[in-house]
Amino acid sequence: MRLARTIAAAAVLAATTCANAGTGPATISARARAVQAQAINLDTHLDTPGLFAQPGWKITDRHSYQTDGSQVDYPRMVEGGLDGGFWVIYTGQGTRDAAGNRQARDAGLRRLAEIREMVAANPDKFELATTADDAARIKAAGKKSVYISMENAYPLEQDPSLLRFYFKQGLRMLSLVHTSHNDFADSAGMGVAPAGEHGGLSAQGKALIAEANRLGILIDQSHASNAVFDQMLELSTAPIILSHSGAYDVFAHSRNIDDARIRALAAKGGVIQVNSLGGYLIDTGATPEYRAEMRKLWESMGNFDALTPEQRAQFRAQMEVLGAKYGIRKADFDDYMRHLLHIIEVAGWEHVGLGADWDGGGGVIGYEDITALPKVVQALLDAGYSDEQVQGILGGNVVRLLRQVQALADPQAVKAALE
Picture 1 (cartoon, rainbow, N blue to C red):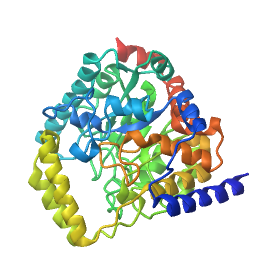
Picture 2 (cartoon, rainbow, N blue to C red):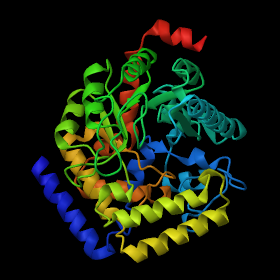
Picture 3 (tube, rainbow, N blue to C red):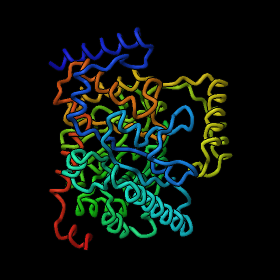
């Protein structure tokens, strides 16, 4: 059966490439729409909260990727069939000193407040979700689920005990590190893994994992080093998640995870959610010179979250010019599906889901925003997966994982944190 699906998947990619130049299925069948309608569709890495404080940007307005670069809003969630997901408290890694730690603490709390304020301002459209059962209940009520996650535990370096406050406010997923090392863990870096600082997890990182286990918080390995993965799998008393990662055996990038570790993750009951950031999917041809110019461009923009739509459009135009100058290749829908189908074959469908990194750099040609989610459903069905299997990948698997992690929590620790 697995060999048959592998052949079917290869045929799907070949046919899509010929017919649609890598942009995915041209039509969505009635079966695909029915399968998606019955599923709980959750994406585990929505960086959209970074837009909430942007002047003039509202989650309830329909925006356009071509106009302002955004990829998720309420009207497009409805069109694409996304029922919700994990909305990210992201903090870029800054200086690891008292001043930097205080700034990170405050930035994390501001982003938490912005997420909760968005939910409070739109009670007819969104609802805070904190348990596995909430996803189905909120969908049945005709609203979108807002689970809260933290990408990079930098806001906790000043005071790790803040994790309990975040938990009380709704946090249900935690990653320890981003693109450079911090006090908790070593990073996977951005292409070639940097030399480790802690040999994986620091003592503080190990303590943070233990606390997350006690509270029933999903532990997220994405962005962390392979050594961190190995230690998380060994130390965590509950299965872990990779909220937005790709396949190293498809493209050897330090942010991706190799097949042996994918199998180990599945064996422990974990789930890997597949990322759609082009630079993690293919070799784009980025040279050190290109990266240096891109770094200067980013630095010139200052606080990206504060940019107006017009300034963002200008920034994207400059990126396009830079990409053309260096002949940078862009990933497409086929490249994304190559990772997704490979990971499903390696892990088994029960251990795979979707974490596209929307509004955080994700999106490829043919899969530019959340309205294109039905293409993934169609492609999975075309590859030979059953209705049940596709529904698991769309969100059922992560709901199951959250239920398991919460069942393994310490009831007394949870009760104390919520009081």
